Length: 441
Image (cartoon, rainbow, N blue to C red; front, top):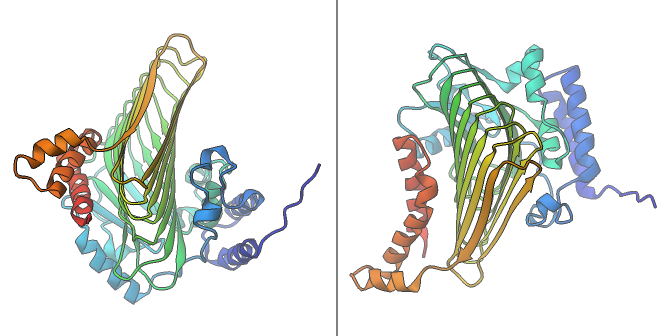
């Protein structure tokens, strides 16, 4: 039986918005054709819903309902609000690369006087210049996921970073996404990070809101290529406004003997989803991925990870922690696939959730698919409340109930945060967690 799906008013509105936006989106020729194909792929599915297995816990048709119109380029007032927000989230010793309402802001960024072996360009410049090599990587993600397809169609700007073979960057790179406020709108960004062989770098991503920014949507995508014997440390901090939506995707490819250490903390946004695919393309590589959700109110945060062990002698570790208060909802989906040729794989995954109220919810879904016979793999998941005996012990020593809870929560998330290699960035994550704890009633 053939079923024809009628386009809804929301679908018509997005089609019209895409038609209007095409003139201001960078890239012509093959880029424009790829955009059109991606948008058609999105239209065939629309917003993901619970009947799609990977999205069963994050039904965007119910949670988000529609895609907002494309944000206008930031004017002087928007940039001023963004600059004020930037001061509150400044990190010492990093190179700032700022996107305001989805557009690169050179006046707020530090894109000059680059270290040897470092190249930085904007997505808009790369797509407009016709650089076939970089365009192939930027347009590489498949459009099987409708939100990735929508990002491919609507991407407006982003950062393209290349680190030459053998270069060891001494200064972390900090990509900051700022929503300036104004009318409700959507931002579509895509960045590319190419790390050469035997190179090393640290990348930080922050998502923040200027004062007055409330209802907005972030649609971000990051593509990472890590060369042979290279190392990338990666930290993501989502501190968006409490009415915002953040849908982010990452695609990471590792060469031989590469090392990828990534950490993510979500304490902002009304609804967020981070979905990442990490593919092992060379033997002897290692991935360490750690994350923390700190949620309260009616916040919904989804972390979905797919680790693809396709070659032998690689290892991966996943540690995820969720602390959920009020009527918050945390989702963790971790899938590890070990393909037939991936002998000697060592892969482990552990997720734990701490529920602070009777109405809090945590859905943990660890999965292993093993098609090789000489592997060491395991996974586990737990959900529970704070230990009453430990609370009593701490309160008996003079701590208030809130102070005792905060101490236990810090210990609970500490294992994931300790994975951050940089002392200053680890302190940054700890500070974000402490701000969340201090704001609890």
